[in-house]
Image 1 (cartoon, rainbow, N blue to C red):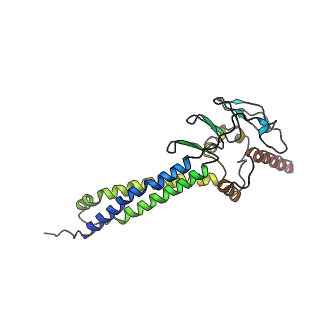
Image 2: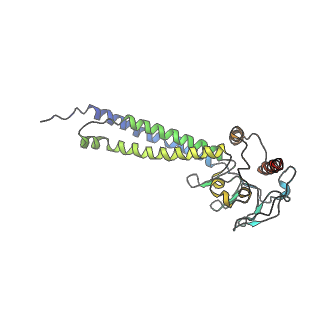
Length: 258
């Protein structure tokens, strides 16, 4: 009769599982802290009584008439240069890159998306904190994944191993899935930050008036300046100014080509 392997590794597995489970009470505090930090600031609301004169612009350049989205009323340009629109929901004259959020019932500056986990919009003011929260979440998940993996010691027979380590194996698989999702989400937002675009603009550029008339991204300043502006607020300047400068550069390029 074949003897069963010694189960000393079972004890190791049990101890590692205990360590992994002991980590669980310590996981929520940093995640709760990161969630509160990224969700507490307002994402950036445009002024209720915003008027065209409130937007500082350089020399203005005429552009053709632009067809606005079906649910928003097009208003006068500022003047004859920047395509602004008045939100039909809250009647605010939206600056460039702003969008109305139905969940928050307000327009959000540099709207990225509404995050149901944070119960808040991700916009101009809290997007950097949201990216930091994703990085913190991924780090905690990878830490838990490492602890779960360190407790997995494979031995025969498999039935006995599953009874002793099945819960730890399920924890490892679940953490692997969560880590993959968090990693992909963080990578996608870092890509958007590097190109100075938002989730809404990336997915709906064909429907956004100030983007569909341009061959590229009018807000892209290059990798270094995009990262510096996103995380440090430098170089400063309004999106309307940057948009108008891009229009001028496009006209100069066309004239040189001719």
